[in-house]
Picture (cartoon, rainbow, N blue to C red):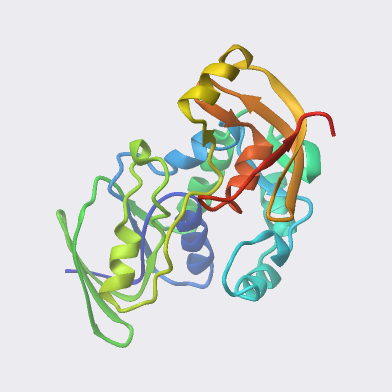
Length: 259
């Protein structure tokens, strides 16, 4: 059995960042992931350019049943800390609307930076690893059985993300672990997603597919003002992705194409 201080399940953005920060505190860290490569979701983020942070970041930008949940985390590591890391690696970036920061070249620059940090702090990344069983033996004693090795860890972190994009390997694993340890799981819903139109609306708007229009979109008194993109399936673009996080089935969405 292999022993480590911290074992993290999930080798994408949150898992890699968690590993780096834990290793900086002189903790021995191992990351496990079922994929064949780390950070696959990072590579597709921001249209391949990775919107790695924003100039304006506050607790108001986070959706949570507990509005204070993220405040302590943001006070310890904020956007300026991450920007400093990006600049230390000399990654070229630019600002888009609303203070959004994107790589000039590729999201791969951000992934390579995180992997380099992991290597510097001797984080071990184990890929192609399936989790078979998790046991909590006592406080700060976890046993994790995989298809390759068994591990003992003082701390266990689940950083496997949500249900979005199954083709990229998304699974309900994190929710299943939460239920195993009797943690309260709220009902899930889609967020930051395009909207699919009904067949009759889709047919009527099909000729507009590929056209982007600067629009104001509102739902339940929440509004955003960015580009709306007509697609062959419905509506997308930054403004639709934003409002989708606030929409529930049965609610109206208002689109103003001439704000």
